[in-house]
Length: 141
Image (cartoon, rainbow, N blue to C red):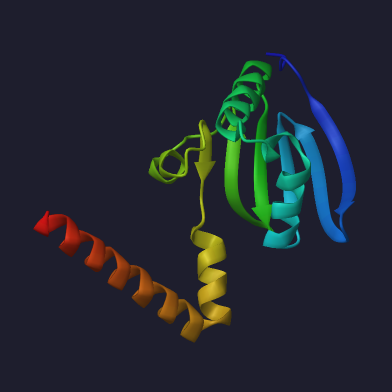
């Protein structure tokens, strides 16, 4: 069966000095970011930068789904997000109001944990303390 749309590409993009590799292999477009900063800069310069981000994300996901395409975003080779035909949105995407985007932060979080264990422990302790404080205050009201 022929695909509705096929993308074949091998591009290198630089946004404010940050490298981004883009490869198209038929029905999958892989965007490989060199850093989180590269991803933030890419989002800040594109259609997702507006206040209508949730609506724009939904439209992009729908267009990709209709075309039978999937965009996979990777951070140094580790998948972090997927949208389009093969995306399976979950709880994290819904919490972040990212309509139709499958968010997979586990691999990058593991890499950060290996590189900076003390900082990671401090952030986790802070989040747990904040959540406990919020639950405690909510119980009293």
